[in-house]
Length: 156
Image (cartoon, rainbow, N blue to C red):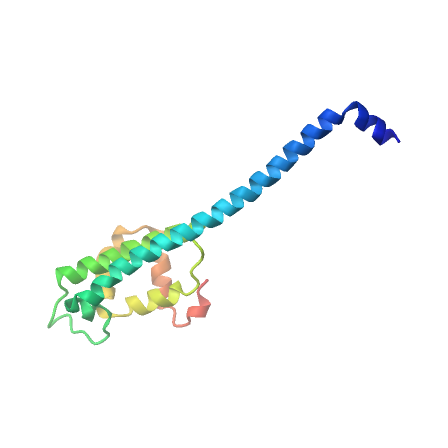
C-alpha cells in the first residue's frame, strides 16, 4: 500500500527514471550494434586492400617468384617491383595487426599461419629483414613469433 501512495505522489519522478534507464539501455544496444557494423566495414575494407595488392601478383607474371620457395637471390636478386609489393603487403599486414589489436576488426584466427607461410619464402624473408627495423616492436614481435612457430595452433 505504501508503494502505491509513494507512486501516486512521485509518479512523474518514477516515469522520468524509467525513461532515463530505458534510454541508456537502448543507447548501449545501439553502441554495440554500431561497433559490430564498424568491425564488419573495416574487415571489408581490409579485404579489398588485400585483394588489390595480391591482384598484382596474379596480373604481373614477373612477380610470381615472390611466393616461390626455390629462389636463388644471389643469381637473381630481388627486383624493385618485388620489393615494393612485399613492402605494401607488410604495411597492409601492419594495418591489419593494429586494427585487430584495438578490436576494430573481427579477429582473424588463421593470420599466424598466413604470416608464417608468406615470410618463409626467400623474397619476403629478405625484404622483411631490410624493412623490420622501420616497424614498431609489437608488430615485429607478432611477425617473428608467427614465422618461428611451426605449430600455428600454438600462436594466440
